[in-house]
Length: 250
Image (cartoon, rainbow, N blue to C red):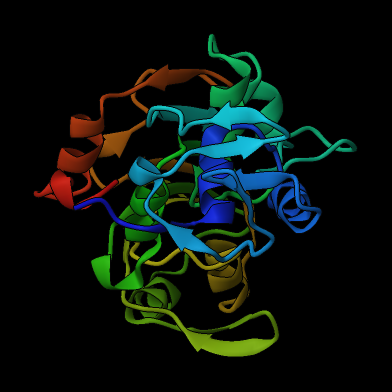
Protein backbone atom coordinates (compact mmCIF):
# COMPACT_ATOMS: atom_id res chain seq x y z
CA UNK A 1 0.00 0.00 0.00
CA UNK A 2 1.44 3.36 -1.00
CA UNK A 3 2.07 5.83 1.75
CA UNK A 4 0.48 9.23 1.77
CA UNK A 5 2.64 12.34 1.61
CA UNK A 6 1.90 16.02 2.05
CA UNK A 7 1.31 18.22 -0.98
CA UNK A 8 4.42 20.32 -0.29
CA UNK A 9 6.54 17.14 0.01
CA UNK A 10 5.16 15.92 -3.29
CA UNK A 11 5.94 19.20 -5.03
CA UNK A 12 9.53 19.24 -3.79
CA UNK A 13 10.01 15.69 -5.09
CA UNK A 14 8.92 16.72 -8.58
CA UNK A 15 11.84 19.12 -8.96
CA UNK A 16 9.48 21.87 -10.12
CA UNK A 17 10.44 24.15 -7.23
CA UNK A 18 13.91 24.90 -5.89
CA UNK A 19 12.66 26.21 -2.53
CA UNK A 20 9.95 24.95 -0.18
CA UNK A 21 8.76 28.55 0.21
CA UNK A 22 7.99 28.79 -3.51
CA UNK A 23 6.07 25.52 -3.44
CA UNK A 24 4.01 26.59 -0.43
CA UNK A 25 3.25 29.97 -1.99
CA UNK A 26 2.01 28.32 -5.18
CA UNK A 27 -0.29 26.08 -3.14
CA UNK A 28 -1.71 28.98 -1.14
CA UNK A 29 -2.22 31.03 -4.29
CA UNK A 30 -4.46 28.28 -5.69
CA UNK A 31 -2.09 27.24 -8.49
CA UNK A 32 -2.08 23.53 -7.55
CA UNK A 33 -4.92 21.10 -8.25
CA UNK A 34 -5.33 17.50 -7.11
CA UNK A 35 -7.74 15.54 -9.30
CA UNK A 36 -8.92 18.82 -10.82
CA UNK A 37 -9.71 20.33 -7.42
CA UNK A 38 -7.73 23.35 -6.20
CA UNK A 39 -6.00 22.58 -2.89
CA UNK A 40 -4.61 25.45 -0.79
CA UNK A 41 -3.39 23.42 2.20
CA UNK A 42 0.38 22.66 1.93
CA UNK A 43 -0.03 19.89 4.52
CA UNK A 44 -2.86 18.12 2.70
CA UNK A 45 -1.96 14.39 2.65
CA UNK A 46 -2.81 12.16 -0.28
CA UNK A 47 -1.69 9.02 -2.10
CA UNK A 48 0.40 10.22 -5.08
CA UNK A 49 -0.23 6.95 -6.95
CA UNK A 50 -3.97 7.57 -6.92
CA UNK A 51 -4.01 11.27 -7.75
CA UNK A 52 -3.36 13.59 -10.67
CA UNK A 53 -1.55 16.75 -9.60
CA UNK A 54 -1.32 19.78 -11.86
CA UNK A 55 0.58 23.05 -11.51
CA UNK A 56 -0.99 25.77 -13.62
CA UNK A 57 -2.51 23.02 -15.76
CA UNK A 58 0.74 21.09 -16.20
CA UNK A 59 0.83 17.51 -14.93
CA UNK A 60 3.48 16.86 -12.27
CA UNK A 61 5.18 13.63 -11.33
CA UNK A 62 7.82 12.59 -8.82
CA UNK A 63 11.30 12.25 -10.32
CA UNK A 64 13.24 8.97 -9.81
CA UNK A 65 15.30 8.67 -6.63
CA UNK A 66 18.94 9.62 -7.13
CA UNK A 67 22.04 9.16 -4.98
CA UNK A 68 25.43 10.84 -5.30
CA UNK A 69 28.58 11.18 -3.23
CA UNK A 70 30.31 14.57 -3.38
CA UNK A 71 33.65 15.81 -2.11
CA UNK A 72 32.68 19.28 -0.95
CA UNK A 73 35.39 21.94 -1.26
CA UNK A 74 36.02 24.52 1.47
CA UNK A 75 34.29 27.90 1.10
CA UNK A 76 31.15 26.30 -0.32
CA UNK A 77 27.96 26.37 1.75
CA UNK A 78 25.34 23.62 1.76
CA UNK A 79 22.39 25.99 1.34
CA UNK A 80 21.12 27.58 -1.83
CA UNK A 81 22.48 31.11 -2.22
CA UNK A 82 22.82 33.85 -4.78
CA UNK A 83 25.56 35.57 -2.78
CA UNK A 84 27.97 32.77 -1.80
CA UNK A 85 29.46 29.73 -3.49
CA UNK A 86 27.14 26.79 -2.88
CA UNK A 87 27.19 23.05 -3.46
CA UNK A 88 24.13 23.70 -5.64
CA UNK A 89 26.47 25.41 -8.10
CA UNK A 90 28.22 22.03 -8.35
CA UNK A 91 24.93 20.14 -8.60
CA UNK A 92 24.00 22.25 -11.63
CA UNK A 93 26.92 20.64 -13.46
CA UNK A 94 25.41 17.16 -13.14
CA UNK A 95 24.24 15.57 -16.37
CA UNK A 96 20.59 15.59 -15.33
CA UNK A 97 17.36 17.29 -16.32
CA UNK A 98 16.24 20.50 -14.63
CA UNK A 99 13.61 18.76 -12.50
CA UNK A 100 16.06 16.12 -11.30
CA UNK A 101 18.68 18.73 -10.35
CA UNK A 102 16.11 20.83 -8.50
CA UNK A 103 14.97 17.83 -6.45
CA UNK A 104 18.43 17.14 -4.99
CA UNK A 105 19.66 18.19 -1.54
CA UNK A 106 22.55 17.43 0.81
CA UNK A 107 22.15 15.08 3.75
CA UNK A 108 24.24 15.90 6.82
CA UNK A 109 25.48 19.36 5.93
CA UNK A 110 29.02 20.59 6.44
CA UNK A 111 29.87 24.12 7.47
CA UNK A 112 31.45 26.52 5.00
CA UNK A 113 35.06 25.91 6.04
CA UNK A 114 34.79 22.11 6.20
CA UNK A 115 35.63 19.87 3.27
CA UNK A 116 34.67 16.33 2.52
CA UNK A 117 32.00 13.73 2.01
CA UNK A 118 28.40 14.68 1.37
CA UNK A 119 25.51 12.45 0.35
CA UNK A 120 23.37 14.18 -2.28
CA UNK A 121 19.92 12.72 -2.87
CA UNK A 122 16.24 13.44 -3.38
CA UNK A 123 15.20 10.57 -1.10
CA UNK A 124 13.60 12.16 1.94
CA UNK A 125 13.18 8.86 3.76
CA UNK A 126 16.91 8.15 3.49
CA UNK A 127 17.56 11.62 4.87
CA UNK A 128 15.31 10.89 7.85
CA UNK A 129 17.19 7.66 8.60
CA UNK A 130 20.62 9.26 8.31
CA UNK A 131 19.68 12.14 10.58
CA UNK A 132 18.01 9.90 13.18
CA UNK A 133 20.28 10.03 16.27
CA UNK A 134 19.13 6.56 17.33
CA UNK A 135 20.84 5.05 14.27
CA UNK A 136 24.25 6.28 15.53
CA UNK A 137 25.88 6.19 12.11
CA UNK A 138 29.59 6.85 12.40
CA UNK A 139 31.07 9.92 10.70
CA UNK A 140 34.84 10.09 10.48
CA UNK A 141 36.77 13.37 10.17
CA UNK A 142 40.42 14.28 9.65
CA UNK A 143 41.37 17.36 11.68
CA UNK A 144 44.47 19.53 11.90
CA UNK A 145 44.73 21.42 15.19
CA UNK A 146 46.20 24.77 16.10
CA UNK A 147 48.12 23.40 19.09
CA UNK A 148 49.87 20.08 19.72
CA UNK A 149 47.70 17.18 20.86
CA UNK A 150 47.33 16.73 24.64
CA UNK A 151 46.62 13.04 25.27
CA UNK A 152 44.83 13.68 28.57
CA UNK A 153 42.49 16.22 26.99
CA UNK A 154 41.88 13.86 24.09
CA UNK A 155 40.71 11.23 26.56
CA UNK A 156 38.27 13.77 27.98
CA UNK A 157 36.85 14.39 24.52
CA UNK A 158 36.43 10.67 23.96
CA UNK A 159 34.26 10.41 27.07
CA UNK A 160 32.06 13.34 26.06
CA UNK A 161 32.24 17.05 26.86
CA UNK A 162 29.74 19.86 27.22
CA UNK A 163 29.40 22.22 24.29
CA UNK A 164 26.76 24.76 23.36
CA UNK A 165 24.43 24.25 20.41
CA UNK A 166 22.23 27.24 19.56
CA UNK A 167 22.95 28.67 23.00
CA UNK A 168 21.94 25.52 24.88
CA UNK A 169 24.34 23.13 26.69
CA UNK A 170 24.79 19.72 25.09
CA UNK A 171 26.84 16.73 26.30
CA UNK A 172 28.49 14.97 23.38
CA UNK A 173 28.38 11.20 23.15
CA UNK A 174 31.48 9.05 23.43
CA UNK A 175 33.70 9.23 20.36
CA UNK A 176 36.90 7.69 19.02
CA UNK A 177 40.01 9.77 18.38
CA UNK A 178 43.14 8.47 16.65
CA UNK A 179 46.26 10.61 16.93
CA UNK A 180 48.28 10.56 13.69
CA UNK A 181 50.64 13.49 14.16
CA UNK A 182 51.69 16.24 16.55
CA UNK A 183 48.64 18.28 15.56
CA UNK A 184 46.69 15.74 13.51
CA UNK A 185 43.83 13.45 14.52
CA UNK A 186 41.00 11.37 13.11
CA UNK A 187 37.73 11.82 15.00
CA UNK A 188 34.78 9.44 14.70
CA UNK A 189 31.44 10.62 16.08
CA UNK A 190 27.88 9.29 15.90
CA UNK A 191 26.19 12.69 16.05
CA UNK A 192 26.08 15.57 13.62
CA UNK A 193 25.54 18.72 15.61
CA UNK A 194 26.34 22.08 14.05
CA UNK A 195 30.12 22.72 14.16
CA UNK A 196 30.37 19.92 16.72
CA UNK A 197 34.00 18.89 16.25
CA UNK A 198 35.23 22.48 16.22
CA UNK A 199 33.33 23.16 19.44
CA UNK A 200 34.61 19.97 21.05
CA UNK A 201 38.22 21.02 20.58
CA UNK A 202 37.46 24.59 21.64
CA UNK A 203 36.16 23.15 24.92
CA UNK A 204 39.66 21.78 25.69
CA UNK A 205 41.48 24.95 24.66
CA UNK A 206 42.44 24.01 21.12
CA UNK A 207 41.16 25.05 17.69
CA UNK A 208 40.58 23.14 14.47
CA UNK A 209 42.37 24.85 11.57
CA UNK A 210 41.46 22.26 8.94
CA UNK A 211 38.59 19.76 8.90
CA UNK A 212 37.53 17.15 6.37
CA UNK A 213 34.87 14.45 6.60
CA UNK A 214 36.31 11.29 5.09
CA UNK A 215 33.52 8.77 5.64
CA UNK A 216 29.90 8.22 6.64
CA UNK A 217 29.29 4.65 7.76
CA UNK A 218 30.97 2.49 5.14
CA UNK A 219 30.84 5.20 2.49
CA UNK A 220 34.21 6.90 1.95
CA UNK A 221 35.77 9.57 -0.24
CA UNK A 222 38.45 7.19 -1.51
CA UNK A 223 39.79 8.77 -4.73
CA UNK A 224 36.97 11.30 -5.15
CA UNK A 225 38.74 14.61 -5.76
CA UNK A 226 37.73 17.98 -4.33
CA UNK A 227 34.61 19.28 -6.05
CA UNK A 228 33.95 15.95 -7.78
CA UNK A 229 30.89 13.73 -7.45
CA UNK A 230 29.88 10.23 -8.43
CA UNK A 231 26.52 8.53 -8.72
CA UNK A 232 26.00 5.56 -6.46
CA UNK A 233 23.44 2.77 -6.49
CA UNK A 234 20.67 2.79 -3.90
CA UNK A 235 21.67 -0.70 -2.75
CA UNK A 236 25.27 0.39 -2.11
CA UNK A 237 24.07 3.31 0.00
CA UNK A 238 21.94 1.09 2.22
CA UNK A 239 24.50 -1.68 2.62
CA UNK A 240 27.25 0.75 3.62
CA UNK A 241 25.03 2.56 6.09
CA UNK A 242 23.91 -0.65 7.75
CA UNK A 243 20.28 -0.50 6.65
CA UNK A 244 19.45 -4.12 5.84
CA UNK A 245 15.89 -3.73 4.61
CA UNK A 246 15.92 -0.96 2.04
CA UNK A 247 12.31 -1.73 1.15
CA UNK A 248 11.35 0.23 4.24
CA UNK A 249 12.84 3.36 2.72
CA UNK A 250 11.35 5.40 -0.09
